Image 1 (cartoon, rainbow, N blue to C red):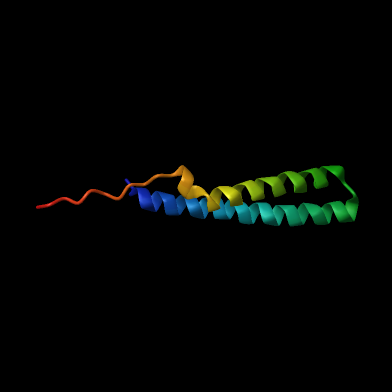
Image 2 (tube, rainbow, N blue to C red):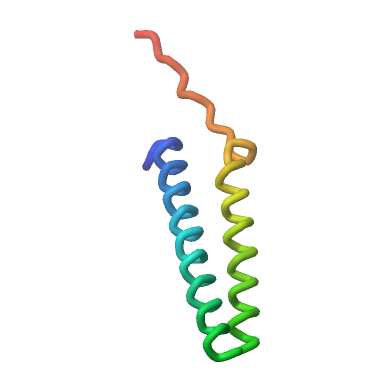
Length: 76
């Protein structure tokens, strides 16, 4: 079993990957909308932009949601 700190680091990496993916997808769909004028592309760009902003807010405020207490010291 992974320690809680390692799981938190893994969680941060996954959220950062989500933000990067959403940023790329927003860029891609915005270019598609500019080229084709597709309403679906614009809608996807806006939705993924909102998801990216929400995930960024979550990542910056993660300490509010996750409380990890330090392990107790064992005296031998």
